[in-house]
Length: 282
Image 1 (tube, rainbow, N blue to C red):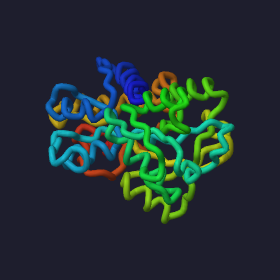
Image 2 (spheres, rainbow, N blue to C red):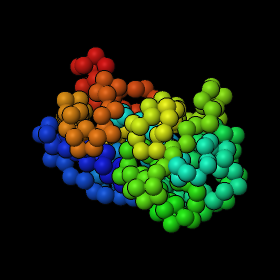
Image 3 (cartoon, rainbow, N blue to C red):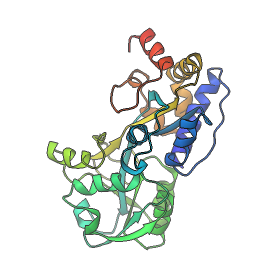
């Protein structure tokens, strides 16, 4: 999965910095966040919004607070799109109205609100499409390749997108339909930390013209009781080894070390991270 690739890149940077870090695969952060909250796993990678919801017990956490979560560092945002066949004639989000689209995402709680955020830029909701239930984004891409749907949601840079691009003879990544302040507000009603970012034609599979896409900030986070010096070492390793992360997973070329400290979201930063940021004047 994409988070596995990102986590592997962060782990490689940490190992380069002298930490002994291993990866434990999972389908989605909503599966391992409770383990980090309980102290069974030290670090994780997830959407900032999901960590914020988990910390406060909001949305699909249904009042169950994960108050031991602490932010370690911001990563590059995850840029997502709805992908369709390049020759489908579907040119904008609202062209999906009445057509079969992936839905459900029972194993990944983040995806439905993110999908709703994209639909909102075209004045749509999930009720405007014919819903085809899948468990995960990978299953959604498979359903698309099997001709069960006309499109699927995924993040730019993922290997599964490249697989689908080759399988169907070319993809089109639909831009947000509108990118003004009203459209952003409509998207943020579903995913509060969403932003819009420009992408150049040809920069990723499916981006056929210059356009604007939706982005969701990602973070490394940890249990509150991970020792300050360990978290400090993790942040330092990421700060110094951006090239290692890029080599491990090329989309991490968008990672900017000086952007690791941003005061957004609900979960507080870990003191070990704040110590490093203070040392660097961040």
